[in-house]
Image (cartoon, rainbow, N blue to C red; front, side, top):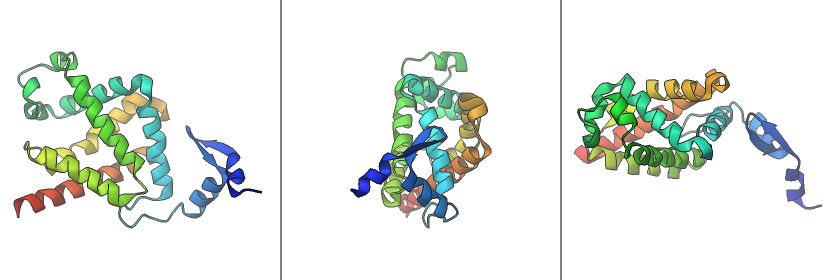
Length: 191
């Protein structure tokens, strides 16, 4: 019998489907933290499950715009970091034709982070790339820290009752990693 035949027995967990072999491995390593991210396998699954709902093709653009509207409503001063939106109301920003394009860029970046939660070297390099492009525009770690209340508000809005405390805390850890990497890049660029 071929080893891959064992993986044909699939089971759904949350909104994702895993092979029985993957489920067993996750259960065994459930409480083992990744040495770089500090995320357990259970937390990685929670991030991936929530992302699969947030990143659904039919709602991707809308959800990306909602993320930015949460940022602007919770932290209005951030609007000034976006030259196109300076001096505009939230209503005007929400209808601006360039908002969906930027929102999609951020959604793609987040997708690359989620896709690489098990490849931490690549994850860190992806965040560094984002950091360099943002720091150059005056958007440093203090702005990334704002995501710690923006993302939970966004997740609760989009996911509603499907949003779990584990999802929220797992995203909190992931965002902490992002802030730490951005802070490190700030230090590298100023030294």
